[in-house]
Image (cartoon, rainbow, N blue to C red; front, side, top):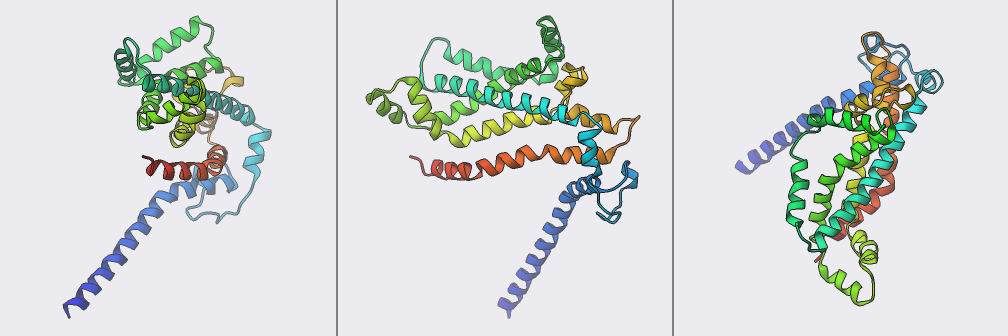
Length: 282
């Protein structure tokens, strides 16, 4: 009898857990569903959107309007350029710096690593005025390359530490074997160390791409010309006090997710395989 009661209580507990997780999923997913609904719903303002998705019909006019009546293609190009250059530059700088710190001994190495760590302690907001003055004096204010350099300088310290910690787990015997076979340090770095660090490389690329792709504060500070505006600033202009084009904003926001979806599809197998190999690495 007690066994049956325990089984009954476990079933009730399982049902309650399922109900709770279902409700939690609906709460988390509803904002996303609401944005998707807004992107395909006729109208402009947020007040005209239905509570139940797609009850007012569906249209692709907002997507067409983005590419015909706005500078969305220019915003997309600018943001994509900054994000790609930032992610690739961050990977190159961080990988070379991490390999140097992980594999070589030199004077003031600990002091240099400490300085890199201290740079991450202070929030970027503190340096806004300094960033503005430096870019202005070097002629890089209101310039996409100036924005890219700021992202590179901000991303490099943390990612150097991150990659260095991962490279420390890779056995030095692999490097020594490559050196015995006549490989140079740079060839060892490219053919031995970097392939072994694939999971962290993919992570660095993804995080370094995400920040400039989604950031609003730095582009708002540095960029002014309409031809240099990024996606975050352009989409924000759709929902200001003087303008209420939430459906256009929603359509543009959905398109922002496309690069992430493509990146995940292309790297999913490599990431999972590399993580599995790293888990059993000796």
